[in-house]
Length: 277
Image 1 (cartoon, rainbow, N blue to C red):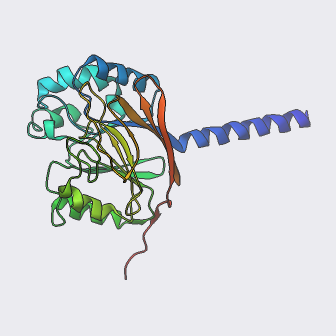
Image 2 (spheres, rainbow, N blue to C red):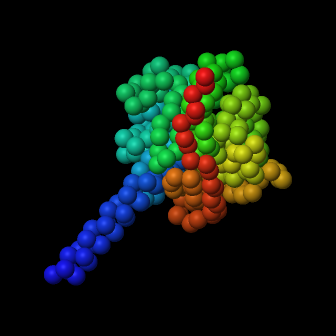
Image 3 (cartoon, one colour):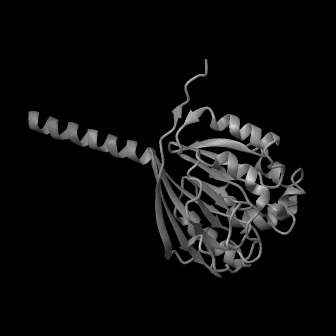
């Protein structure tokens, strides 16, 4: 009986450890430029939904103009099933009509143009590329204040327009320098869309940047760029991540489920910053 009791105790401890491990990591998908109600967008979304992710990051653009009708006809049929676990950021297509489209659709989950959430030991920042991003802007001032609260680098920021991109249609956006400069040295991952491509950039300023904008039926190409570690074009797909304390694994997957690129990053776990005296 003693031995049986020991075995049962060990099994219970093992199961509890497994449960704790499962809770300590999260599967997160990220993609943008896919809310166009095309067959291609629906197929990709079905693959993401079938994976049963813990969180979904929508990287912006609801077509054609982000009106209430566009959300109803373009977004809801595609990514609507993921709404309860979605954290969005606005793209250029929906920002103009944000008061009738973006905010009503996401309320009460999202009521601010930029915000912070926590996922599996990571601070995740939804930033807004469609409003002021200069160093004197309210957004950058808020971001710097938030970043100063903790030390470490286990942070992920996502916003629509990329600071650096090999995309042949948009490419680099110097207007995003204010966000990038605030994040550098404090943030490990940055995710963007806007260019309808999948690309992984070389680490820069301590940041690994991923562009996941190949969610819809209109795809772009990339230009030769020595800063690029991976690019797939023109091919539809999305970014799948597993976030855990101190690390993340990332995969670009085609709509068929094929893994096109696999990478991993490590980061310094976050700790409360010491108070200034």
